[in-house]
Structures are given as C-alpha cells and as structure tokens.
Amino acid sequence: MSPSSPPPASDLQVDFPFDYAAHVGDGRRMGRLPEDAQGARIAVIGAGGSGLAAAYELLRAGCRPVVYEAERSPDGPGGRRLGGRMYSRRLRDADSAVVELGCLRFPTSARLVRQYGQTFGVRLEPFRDNYAAPTTPLTVLDVDGRQYRAREIEDLHGLHDGFRAAHSRWQQALARIGLFQIQRAVAARDLTAVRRHWRGILLRFELWPFYRFLRDPDGVGLSHDQARLLGTAGVGPAVWDSFFDLSTVEILRLLLCTEGSGLLYAPEGIGRLAEGFWSHRTTDARGRTCSVEESNEGTLRPAVRALDVEPDAARGVMVHSEDGRSERFAAAVFTPQLRLLETGVEVRSTSARIPALGPRLLRAVRRLRYWQSSKTALVVEHPFWEDTSMDGVTLTDRLPRAAYTIDYGPVRGPDGRRGVLDLSFTWAQDAMKVAPSTLEERVDLFVRDLADIHPEVADRLRTHARAAEAVTVSWENEKHFRGLSRWSWPGDHPYQRDVFAHFMKDFTGAPAVPGEPPNALYLAGDDTSWSPGWLNHALASGLNAAWGVLRQLGAHPDPGNPGPGDLWNDPRFTPLTTR
Picture 1 (cartoon, rainbow, N blue to C red):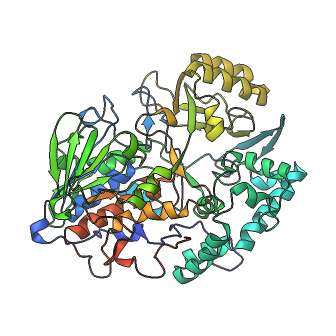
Picture 2 (picture 1 turned 120 degrees about the vertical axis):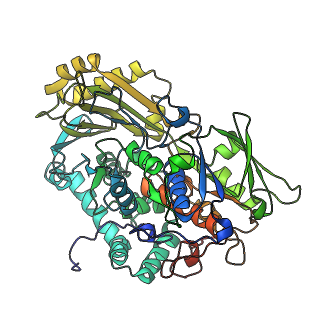
Picture 3 (picture 1 turned 60 degrees about the vertical axis):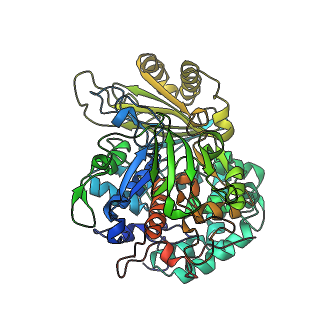
C-alpha cells in the first residue's frame, strides 16, 4: 500500500488490537483443556452473536455449552429465538424478502463475521448504503425541504457549497488527528504505532462530546449549520446529529472500522449466521464431530431468573431458569444487555463477605448508557421504486431520517414477495418521537414524508403501502434489550475499560478490575466491546469470555496461538486508562 493510497478500514479494535479472526481461523482452537476438564458443562446465557460464538468455540475446545435464551419464537429451537439482534424476519415462507430488525449491515473490515459466514455457508453481498455507487443507484439528501441527488458523496460538493466546505474540513481533520495513520498502522500490523497514535487521540478527545469536535477549531472547525448539515448527510454510518452528545472517541472508533470500507448484508438474512453457530457440525479437541445444537439436545433452555455465584471458581455457578430448574455449571457466560443485571436477572453470591460482582464493576454496569433505536419496514410484492428517485437511500432531517430500498431477488414460492422498503431507521430522540405510535401510525407518518421527498413515485408509494405488510420495532421497548446498544458519553472510558476487562479476572496475578472477585461468572456481549453496535465486536467479546472460561479450567494455548488474555500485559495490548 503506497503512502498516498486510501487506508483500509481497521479490522482490529484499537483499544485492544487482538486479531480474533486469526486466533480461531484455519481450524485453530482457543486452547487445550486438561483431560479432567474435558466435557465441562458451561452455561451460556443469551443466544445472540456473543453467546453463540462463545458456545461454538467452547465446544471446539472440548467443553459442553448449554445455552439459555429469553426471547420466544414458535419456529426456534425449544420455542426460543436464536440470534439476539441478528433478528431476521421472513414474513412468508414464499418470500425472498427478509426484514432485518437488528443487524442491518456490517463493514467489509469485519473479518471475524466474514470468516464465520464462510464456514457456515452464509452468502454476503454489498449493501445498498448511502453514496455506495455503483451498488446504490442513488442517494437523495433531503435537508431544509430541498433535495440533492448523489451517487457518491463528492457529488454533493457541486450541489451544495456549504457541504463542500464541511466535508473537506471533516476529511482534513481526520487526517490531521492521525485517524488514517492508525488505519495504515493496523493494516501493517505495526501495533506499537497503533498504540502511540491512539493514546494521543484518547487522551486528547475522550472528554469531548462529538458536537464539540465538529465545532471546535482544534477539531473540524465547522459552523453550527455546517455541523448540522454534515450530520444529516450521514458521513460514516453513525455520524448523525442524533449522536452529537456522544464521546468523540466513540465516533472515532466507529469511523476506524468503516472509513475506507464497504458494507455487506446477508441476502438470506443475518439470522442465518446464528443458525450456523447453532447447527454447524465441527470437531472438538478430540476429533469428535459435534454441534452446539447436539450439545443442547436440539433445544434452547428458557430465560434465566437468577445466578448463584460461588466465590471459589472451582465450585462454579448455579443457574436458575424460569421453568423452575436449577443446575450447577463449571462456569457461566452472561451475554445479554448488562442493564438486565439490574432489571431481569438476579446475581447473588453464596458468600456474605465476597460479592458476585465487585463495587467498581457494578458502578460501571449501572452507568452504561443505551440508545433508543427504531425501524419500520414494508414488505412489498416487487421493487416498485426502480428507476425512480427512491431507488437507493434517502437521508433526511424529517421524521424518517434514513430509508433504504432492497430487492431480495427471485421469490421462493407462489405469492412470494421480494422487496423491502425500510421506511425509517432512527436513533435517540428521533426514535423517541414515534415510540408511542402504533405500527399503522408510524407507516402513515413515514409515507407522508417520503411521498413529499419523492413526488414522482408518491402515488405508487401510497398504493403499495396500503397493500404491503409492515413490521416495526422500538428496541428500547423490548423487555430483554431495553435499547439497541450501549454508547459512550464523554468521561465513560473508565467504565468501558472495566466491563471489557471482566473476562481477565485475576489471571495475571492481580484483578484486571480492582476489587473484582475471581469467580466463574464471565460478562460478554456487545456492551463489553470497545465499539458497540457492530456484530464483529460482539462476536469477539464472546471469544474473550470463552478464553476466560478455558483459562479457569486449566487450558493452555496452542504453540504460536496465544489468546486475548495471554497478551493482556503486552504493552501493545493492555487497555489504556484515563483515570
């Protein structure tokens, strides 16, 4: 890669740049268990990406994972739903169309997702994202009642002088603070340089809200109107004005894995990845063929209501589920939203003196912040929007905020449908505007605004909306989620560091989180990752927990393949602190 070529998106989490894809790729296992630990039963709570990845790799290492799930589904194993936020809905068996209510897309830099997808035979294709020519025929930016049509983001430069200046300053600022240098260092696997550049960014900007970064002369230096315009235009998948309150560092982490990257989706539904983790037959450390499904006798266990955690890790964890069953496991991996530790699952210590979770970690859990997110979609017979201004992506400062059109190709049977129109995909305050609205009210509101933005297709839109089947979700209202994902505000880095570090316990001779007891409970899930909202990082968090479990059981890494915890004290990896 020449110094002048655009840097690729980062495939590592810069706060802990461990290569998870390489660690478990090409048949490599996370560790080798001693003979007396073979077949150890491990409770995995939550059948989302993190839990399923942990269960799959624990199985390959020789454990027997037992998976619990609170979400119900008549079609799922044991009447439970696989996937968590990998929530794909095919409304009719004959449809090729799939509604993605959770994981809509992911960057091509997500090597771990792509690697598992290839293993499980999950087809991936370029996603119709904003300004993604030639995949996306058109992106329409609607702001202040005016529309600007673009195929690539630079097309807006000639259409809106204010955008030209704002976007140019944005790119210059990212280069000036060293974001592109980090991406190049990651691509070269120069982790010393990654750490040096990231330390400077973290210490400089961790206390800055994103809005300040956009406005401050030491950041991008935009006017208020320019910052608002840049936010509405959707530069980067998360750089919306909905996120102005977030930590600048949170936004920069997102950009590191998306700048210079395309976006992918699964035409058969991202839920296929969850099914792959569940049903794919692999081999364990002894060469025996098995699957997570077989390990669980084809059934997901029901919701967990309480955990009794022994202070001595060797005595494991007692899991109490909603069906009245109580079972002891060698360890437990907890992957749902961490706020459920306050609202849905009681975690108890069997010791009056030693808590199940230390006070510092509990402080972090209680102060994590979750973002509202809403999505509403129509499933239609065919892509009626072809060759119109709606054929692609609409970005707007009106109620819908973002709309996407997707053609899923030939239907699977008679009366099947192939088109999905995501009428709206919103975050934070924009999601709250429609949170109390019914499905019918949401559809009417979004169709009203989109019809005004796209008058050439307005009549067809209204006609198809009346005939279509609609689906919606507000993740903050979902009992077992209470928000789509955690995001960090300025000053949250210490909390983020502590929840990430929980899997390390005291394996290096001292607790990675001061005051944290060395028991057999391991926290994982998207919440614990450095950059939430991305499936790749959720999967990696499951591998962290799996490493902790294996280390507790006495496993050792294969030669030349150290795990994430084996490198914890390496100065290139040890998470930085800002306390």
